[in-house]
Length: 357
Image (cartoon, rainbow, N blue to C red; front, side, top):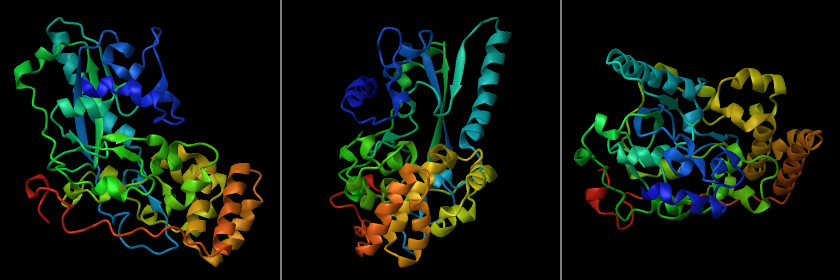
């Protein structure tokens, strides 16, 4: 599988940044995510499932007030999506085990939702769920890219599920469209289908601990948790259906959240409000750091008193980013305005490869 062969060179290029879990190796020195057998020697096949999480909410590219931040769409629900998807996966896994136990066959399985040593999107591609877009997201022709992936790794040969000749790999329908590449403020998509995660806004605001490089802070704009730009500009998401799952409905207070309210959260407020939410991954310090950057990029004088308080924080990271934000506002630097990235048609994109408006 070509995507798995590319994993080791991708990590060794530094594109994984500080995400050490992606760099874990087995006792033979192989990256665990470089193949199924590298992490799970008994593994023979992977069952891949997808769940639509697209909430009924505005896009990050829609006009917003300068006092509003942005939280990635997948984190707008107060529920933990890992548990929601895993619960559904476990039903499938239980039925599978029950079936083979009744046939006096012992099999081994593992169910994962973002937690296992599995490169989910590669297996999703070969399972026919979608193609890997130029932004590296799995894109389904009907659902777009707003989908969670879950996998069940099994010791069953692939032929137990479907004859190999019937393998249905989804055709790549990105065509010549480059909207996602053109729209990325940090140029994290270094080539079609190749992401330098260490430059991605989602990486900076979620995974990165400590200081965010100064040259990237203006480019982060108003993002306080994650980034959806490359998906929001994708033509295949233009008519993506909204999820009907009640557990994945958005908390309205997290859609274009007020920066001032986020800045005034106490540690206790943060823990109480985001317990079980993906937002807890950023940690309290990380969220305040991100809010300080967004306030600095807003250029609004009204934030200076709050930023003064943050600059006096015993947390050195929060304090340093608050001081930077104050300097931004005092210099009158609003940040780099986002240009329009929503033309009627992608430049040069064949109509057959992009959904109709």
